[in-house]
Amino acid sequence: MTMRNPPHLGEFIYDVYLKPAALSCRYPVKQLDAASSLLSQIFKDRPS
Image (cartoon, rainbow, N blue to C red; front, top):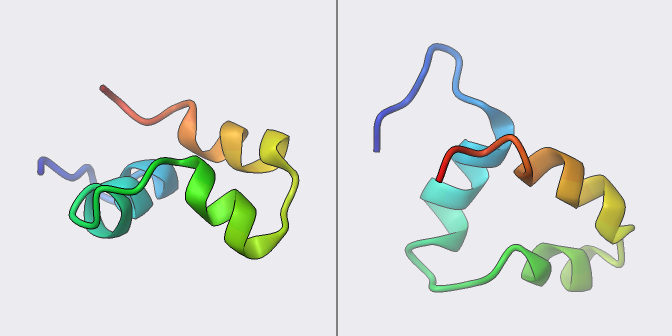
């Protein structure tokens, strides 16, 4: 994982928590009972 300084929030969450656990970006939305649009904005800037 190549991190910028500071890393993008979506990139950090995805690379450190979701990817190793093989979870989709929808998982935190369901667990937090949050608006999907809010978390989509966090993750959409994450590089592929």
